[in-house]
Image (cartoon, rainbow over all chains, first blue to last red):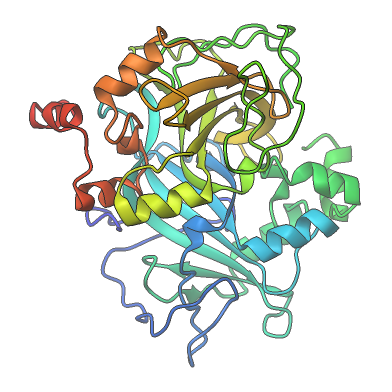
Length: 210
Length: 210
C-alpha cells in the first residue's frame, strides 16, 4: 500500500542515486499481467510487476541512507529493503557476479517508532513509499542494466532514462557489475573471494574512499 | 562473523524482550550437525544452527528497537533482521498462524553510517552481533515455543529458560501465537483477515495501546 499522504518523498536509495520522487496521482501504466522472477515487459517497454518479490532472497536493509550530507532531514524516516530473484542469487554465490535476467527490487518502507510495546528506535510499518527495480537484460538495455520505478507493487514500472544520475553513479561507484554489493554484507565476501569487484571500486578502496 | 571487539551488547530485540547479552569467549556447544529448516537438537537439547536462514523468507528489519525508553543509548546502533522458514511462512499465509516446527531467526547486525559513498543514515555491515531463534515444537516445549541464543551462525543455540522475561512478554503482548506479528508488515494483514490475533493483543489495541 502506498501512503496516500505522501506527496513528495526525497530519498537517495541504494539502487538509484539521485533524488527519487514519488508523487501520488501520477499516471502510470496499469499492470497487464503478472511476472515471476524473470523480467517481462508490456508492449510499451514498461516492466511488469515483480510479483512475489517479498519471497525472494533478502540482501539487506538500510535506514535513511543518503549519498549527500544531511539529506535525510525530511523528518520522515524510511527503511529500504533489497531483494533479488533466487536464481540470480544462486548464480552470484557461484560466480561473484550477476547473470542475465537478474532482477533486484528496492522497497522503500515507512519507519515507525512508537507502536505496540516499542518505545524507541524504528520498525517497519505497512506503508510502502515506493519501489525501484534494477534489471539486467543484456539484449535489451545499453550497458546491460536498466532502472524502473513503480508506483505500487501491482503497477507496471516506468523506465528511468539513461541520462539519470543513477546510471552514472552505479557505473562509477558500485562494487560489482553496477550494483552496490558493498552494502550487501553476505555477498561482499563472495565478490572479494571471486575477484569480481569493479576496477573503479577497487581504485576508490585503494584511495581510502571505501 | 561475530564482532571480536564486542564484549557486551545490550539490546532489546524483537523476539526476546529483556537484555540480551552476548559475551565474546563464552563457552558454547559446538555445532555437531547441520539442520535445514526443521528444528533439530543435540543430545543436550541445544538447537542445531539454522543453516541457510538468510535464504528463508524475510519478515522485517528494525533498528535500535527498544521496549524501554532511551535504552538504545549505548552508542552502537544495530539492525535486527527477522527470517522464518519457508514452510511455516506458507502455512501462515493460509491460516494466519504458525504451524508446528516453525523456526524464526532474529539476526542482530551492526549498523554503519559512513562507508563507500554513503554519508548519512545507516546500512548493514558485516558484523553479526548475535542470533536468537524462536522455535515452535509442541511436543517438546511447555507453551509450545522456546527461545535459543546462538553465539554465531555456526554454533549450537543455548535454550533460554522459561523464567526469562522474553516468554512472559511475548505471551502478554505479541499479536499472534506469542510472536510479534504486529511488527511484520506483510503478515499483520493476514492475521487480521484470518482473525488469529491474540485476546491480549486485541485488548491492548482496544485500549489504544497499539
